[in-house]
Amino acid sequence: MNFSPECIASMGEWVGKQQVMLEQEMIEAKAKEMQTEIDREILWGLFEGIGWTRFKISRLTDNNHAVDISYWLDTNCKGQFERNGAEFLFEDSKDAVLFMMRWG
Image (cartoon, rainbow, N blue to C red; front, side, top):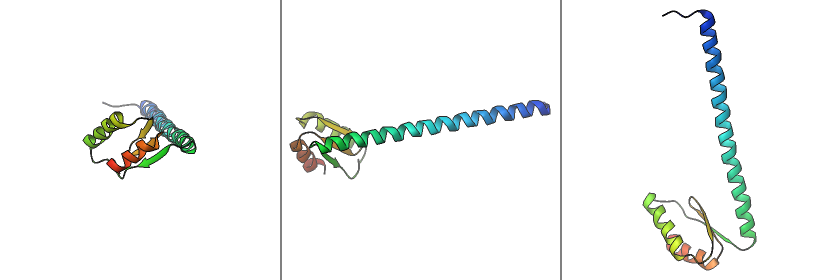
């Protein structure tokens, strides 16, 4: 099968446009991810400013560990809490202390 030079040039332009669109989608996704992280940091900073306690565990061992922590949080925390991966924010300082003793 032979393609004319015009057809090849047209396909090249199409591929170039697709690449630009893909790059733009990747940039937009990363920008949104960064904005979400910035917003969370600002919000958590405000919560810390009004007395919430922040704690980060060294790492999650595996998915079962994460599930165990989630269950413990739901079962034991009296106040509100937030979680982002291995970082936790507690409204009630007693919840934070118990969490640190159990998981820290």
